[in-house]
Amino acid sequence: MSLNKSAFLALGLLVVSACAGPEPAPPTPKTVNTPLDQLVQSDEKAAAQSLALDKSEWGYLLVEAESGKVLAARQPDTGFPPASTAKLPTMIAALGILGPTYRFTTQLLAQGSLKSGTLAGDLILAGDGDPLLTAGDLRALAVRLRDIGITRVEGRFIYTSALPVLAEIEPAQPDTAAYNQGLGGLNIEFNRVMLTRPSGEAAYTTPSEALPLIPDFPPNAGAPFDMPVRAPDRLAALMLQRFARAEGIDLPEPGPGIPPPGAVSLAQIRSQPLLEIARAGLEYSNNMLAEVVGLSAAQTLGSSADTLQGSADTLGVWLEREVHGLNRFATALANHSGLSTQSRMTPRQMTQLLGYALDRRFDGWRFDSLLAPGGRPGSLRGRFRDPATAYRVWAKSGTMRYIKGLAGYLDAASGRRLIFALFMHDPLLRARLENDPERFSVQSRRASSDWRDRTDLFEAALIRHWIKAY
Image (cartoon, rainbow, N blue to C red; front, side, top):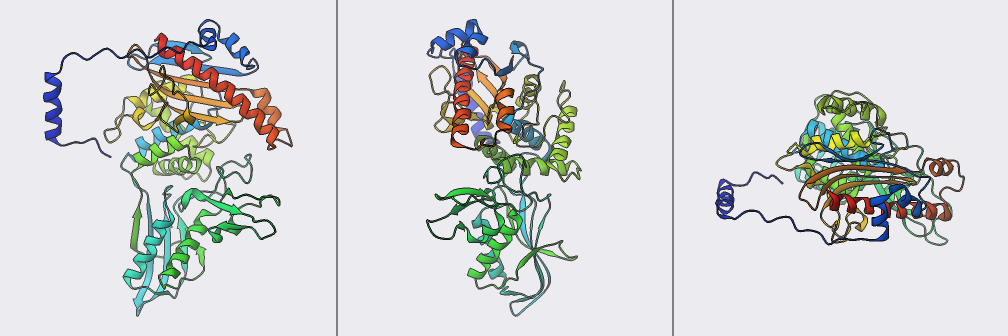
């Protein structure tokens, strides 16, 4: 979407505004005044203790967007693991480097000659990272082959990636976690597939081509559940082969390779513009999407890094140069998605980045409008629905076990726009978790979910206080 409306519409808006009276004062939200809210206002530490969070650490910074004036702070220069709030600097950098109208391209190339339906040469499936590529897109490419008149390929069927191909995002994460999928220049359906294991029968994936491309799964796996794909580029090629077969086209077994000299483009699939990809990535917090976008931005800057850490460092250096006052950020992040306990960000760094982004316009859009609002169904896990906070919180959340982050913008009751970053974690419980052989048990997960729920209450009380007080 572009905000470049017609001149007629712009003139109409000017006429309406010229005839309008003074703007009404912002409505005062209905106050939510729970015992926890009262306690947060008078003694934060006691409020945390009342939620059994006395061993947890937290830090925040609240600033006025227009002036940069600090309104509230606690450990603003202490580094905290940001979890998925790390996607904010990734998208801010990518929108600045690639531009909001940038589109990824997935294409079919061919080298050789076509005679009587046979391509005497190679067919190449090439991608530069479209994170939203679907099975329908690959089917469309197969249809295009049929329309061109190709029914058989005599040479090779090659798939190739313009980005590094990685089997997973974070080795320390569970091997079968669907959010820790592989990625590269060819991705399909978020590189996740459904595994089904009927009682007494052989397990299968949907699509079936993915079965050898997923990690080993537990022998007692029963109900269908998502699995990460470790070789998404190969799966994309196998799916194209399936769809080509449905169109009566015989393709050889696909293999990785480099396009031969003289290959020409037969068909292209262009992605949604980066602006829409960034919006989706921030709202749904997809790790693969963030990593691909970050890799593409770093590559555009000339980076030859083949690791997520190296790529994240490239964007960190760019942001340090671009954002006034941003210091010690060049190596702050271990990857682009936040799926790491090694990343560290300070509340001050995050608010500086958000302040910088708020002053930009991305194809007409202001950055805060790309974030999810609290109060909308399904947004921010259904939080901030009460009258004091609904549609006043525009933010990105981040959650790992015993790690929490929340950062974004607030519309205060006074009418002031505020920028905030709030991080929480319990280093003792996190360290204990990482050394626990039963860390993925139901009981262990239930305990960390209980900690998350209690931090949710603490966060919400702080946010309500800030909205009311400032």
